[in-house]
Image (cartoon, rainbow, N blue to C red; front, side, top):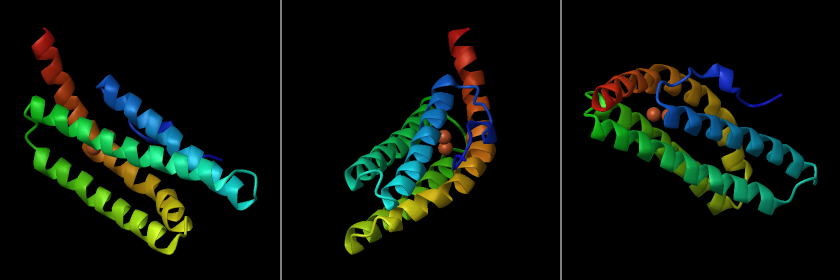
Length: 143
Ligand SMILES: [Fe+2]
Ligand SMILES: [Fe+2]
């Protein structure tokens, strides 16, 4: 069973946003699986850590790219959306700090395993209306 399925999140009307969500869900499921295998000695700590680092990079780029699009097309609720991203990143950074301070990877893997709830809610209630707005604006610019 995967941690989170792409079917749980609404399809974005902006392709690059949809692709980012699909990629991120794949990374999350990979981490969940690697954490399980690592506990059983069937994957190395290096493999797990490198996937977690890929996730940290991906999520920052994910948010930064959405924020860039929102600024480019003057999305009126930019501040609300950006604040939601910033609050999540703060919690994520706290989990990373605990992981490093205690050299205990479960501080971050447990956090990551709890994130799908936030992600599904954020994508469906914040990203989806943002993408609808952006898609309309993009059509106007191209049309
Ligand atoms: Fe998103
Ligand atoms: Fe977002």
